[in-house]
Image (cartoon, rainbow, N blue to C red):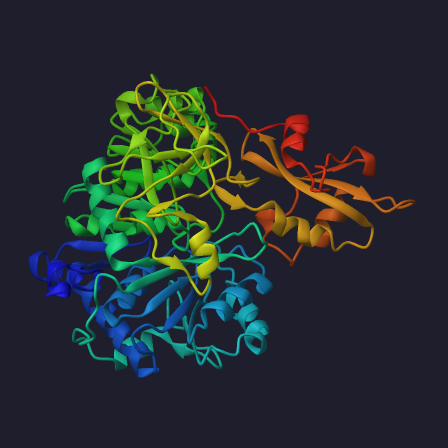
Length: 536
């Protein structure tokens, strides 16, 4: 009876195809599918993957920009009992290779073709061809395109595979506790960790968001954040449970006016963005902003980084019919807190209070004692049905992140007298630039490989557009000279572009702050060169 008590993502499209067969369930700028079509194509893909030798619990990787195929791919993983491993397209090849080898992906789905917007060839096929010798676990390569059905040597055509596969529901029994997605996140050791999300944890996530954000049958959610990013994973299927529509925004490089046009043309009701996106839209001239009808937007979310007061006021003015939410969470924990619309200007700087379904947050001091009094900073731990299952193949790191049933992402916070939470520092030394997480150790490992570099510490410093910028504080070997451009160029191709230092500060060895044990004190560098702080 265990499986019968829970519907999983495997079942939702099947039910929706029966209830609303002709309603548009998923789309992008170039294609749209009814719930019936979406369900059938997802069944075909699941069966096609099985025909390629995939079995329940096997992993497959996906490399693509936002497109409606992501909705089919996630659903196909659910139907076949497979585990989807999204690959962030901004990563460098060595970073991608590590993830694919670590999860032992058997199939690699890669976007090919040309961009319908500018006619330029997408780079992923050529890139993956150069990686093949380094990812031996991959047995089959599958390619697809936004428009058309191009064929590549060594790749199975996505559309051909669907056409040849059965449209019947796979017979695989999928339990709520089975893994659905492994989402890789950056790690303080320089290697990303595979966060295992089960059907039950994501099922809980979607239902909690339905209640907290009041999603309904008429909502149209626009996925602007990359579909391989946890933000879009969290909001990709929320509408689906209540019969709403989800749209993938085909964004290669962010264009704020094009986003406004998409809101207007497609009558979008909800999207989740980072402050950088909002700032770029607000910076458009009034004559541009006034060209578009934005009255369909009913609710907006700010996440991944704090937003300033003027940004919030600008959002509410630009979208007059919208309510504004602000959320805090992590890949592992899901959404932990939310600041509701009526609290936005009265609790500036706060991340809100616990979302529905989350237990009372626990704050612990450095000695592991539970903090019960207000306005005392401690490490934030949360517990909810949204929690991840484990870090893939890393039980020690899983155990280290837990205190009993409570998880910590390493964030420090305090609770005020009314129960609202405020972050006071980032996990360890993490940088959030344009909504993307950057772990200093990853960048330090690369910059430190430069032959002129003796030592390096990477911190986040304030940036008007991106929130924070990656800044490298560098000590050169005696007698050496270098330029910031030289350091940045050395990093290209070794790490993702958004991790490359945008600012380089050269200091003397004796100026690098260290602990008694010789460990670099990032906190001191942040205080000296621009410590991150919430906007209040």
